[in-house]
Image 1 (cartoon, rainbow, N blue to C red):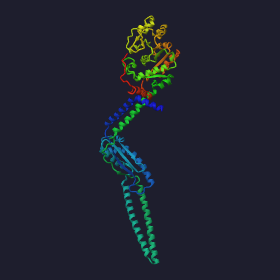
Image 2 (image 1 turned 90 degrees about the vertical axis):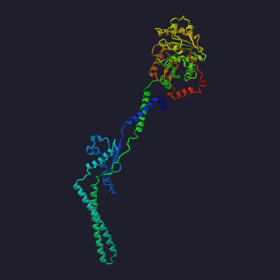
Image 3 (image 1 turned 120 degrees about the horizontal axis):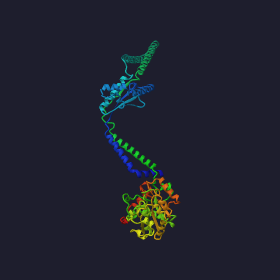
Length: 537
């Protein structure tokens, strides 16, 4: 069942490629067929032996004729027959070119075989079939010379004479038997019986001679070749239906090819695409799966949970919030680090949306953009980045409340990264960072920190030792399993185990459960208030 679901998932992901392969294959097969010339096939049927005239052919004669038919099937494709055919018909072509046009079909359990000729012109196809049969007869051992012909005629004459004599003697015997019944004297009976015995002996001799001559005649005719059905002009082309057949065959080939390619791509693809992949590879729970946010394709915008509170993505972040609240670490979870293996996996969007969701649950939240190399949070919330974390770490005496930015979401304060410093890692590992976190704890129930990727720099691993929990963001279908394992091992080296994974940019249609989940939260049934959206922060 799991294997079947895997195939279904592959189809859902690659259906467009499979459909494209079917359409392109079918169209290619159909268009190619339109340029094929029409072909016509003529056939002539021959028989080996004299079984049309023989009422009781024996098994030896049948077996011999079948073997001869196989031999003739090979002879007809040889140069003598083909060359003679071309010369007789006056064709402007080489005899060897006919080899691919001629086929011989042996009819099972008979002495019949067919010569089939496929050609672009129906009349030429008929002429070729008839002439090939004629040339085969001329050049086969069935052709007899004049002496043999005289011998055959003599045998025919003798057989006829014997047949007449046998008929006459049979009549004489019947007459004598009738006369015998009328005899009344012993002498008459004896004389009639002697004459009957003589006639019967004569009849037996004639019948024996007839049988011998007939056997000789039949033996000489086993090798006979006779045309029993000459070729007719084929008016219907044999490839008239090729366009449909070729289109279907090409479409099936396209289906198999693209489905095979899709399967191979998935087979060799070691990216993490589902919660099962995450748990199997990293042995970590998946706290939430977030589908791809289209608004992030070009330019980061306000947190999605503020734009559409009923979207599947917003519900996914609520699920993440709930899973964090009911986790074993919730009692001490006042600082949360959001990181990933590499850049672009959506950790900043995850941190921003989680911060908004937490604030909507009446928690005092501070969101820190600790990615002082490629900061994004200020762009998501569209706030200035002139002052921020880097300023506070360099000068702890600055007014914290002045640098913290409040948005329209209640209970949410944002600390942007500030100007990019030359030494981010040193600043994040400095005592000033610990001091700043202590100050922020005084006015926040939870601090959410957006950090650089784990494998790019050491910033995230430094921060991980200063927080209560770490969330690991993975981009579904992009992040390789070995990359994630390396990132988790980086945290393990500093004694940190992630709380769990957020599977980001997840394709719901790749799995049956994800597809149902997405459909439920995207359906009008769930959107009890479809117009209830919030303006961007």
